[in-house]
Image (cartoon, rainbow, N blue to C red; front, side):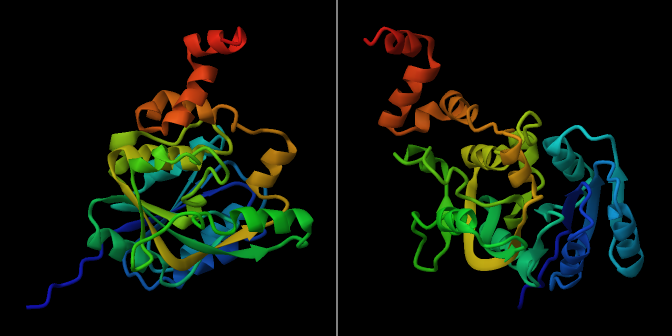
Length: 289
């Protein structure tokens, strides 16, 4: 007897702030999804442009729930967390206001969870939408970060399973530090929050992969080989703004890795971080011992 497929609720979480330029295209990509059980949760950081009007119009046009929440801005991480906190779905699928989901994205990610219940987060490959001139800097970025898993090997089906052993790689702290993907590339089980906590609200740039690596302490992450999303590159995206304003938290990240995952680290990496972040190590380094 054939097993009847189940379709657990998936929450498409869209944190927004002044996203009118591309928001309608992001929302339109939700309507193309082949997966039948969706809700959209929008968390707005008091946008001053037409973002809310675009979402409200979308709400009137679709036949699935669209819930909109507006609140005082408290930073990127707080907006992400606010969006997830309002979600009702078993699975959380981020979609950022600049990006696009391809039609089978949600369907294939839910199938992956059902096939591999030990997985806590599923990610996918991504293509790029260029809304900026493809200059030398963009070429360098695409060469370095176009395929975040290029240095890793999957199984015979090109499925890449990550677990806590990834911390033991000698190149773990080398670029790219994010080997999973931007938030639009991932879906995670709602109950993983109960195990690892929320996104760090004191981070502005690396809060996504800091979250992913906490997931790996408790469960696997699966990277699917298919391109299921499109990630938009443009001058006003958060990464570019943070870089231009020198609002980067990369300097905090190695110490967090040392304090949180030292028992998993490669011995050479652990020793290097020990010299920087332990009291004894700093003394020895200072006096050249």
